[in-house]
Length: 75
Image 1 (tube, one colour):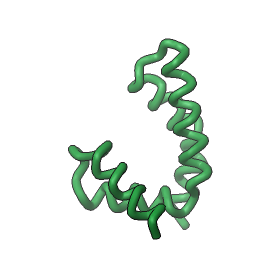
Image 2 (image 1 turned 120 degrees about the vertical axis):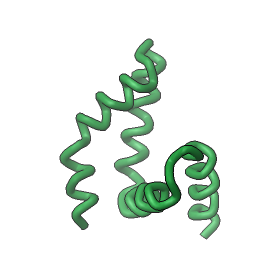
Image 3 (image 1 turned 60 degrees about the vertical axis):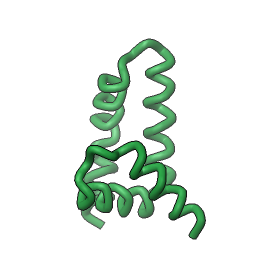
């Protein structure tokens, strides 16, 4: 319960420009497989530290995990 509350706070802060419906959809996906999103986040951070821009790192990592994300969305 506390974990969900903190996740919502962080999501609202990080995605303040994202419409509420999309935020809820993203939160639902994160709750389904938090380990996948942790892995994605760690890889984006590692690439950023390696000198890539956040946008490029995010796009490359999301492309890499596209199949897993699609399966998650179909559950």
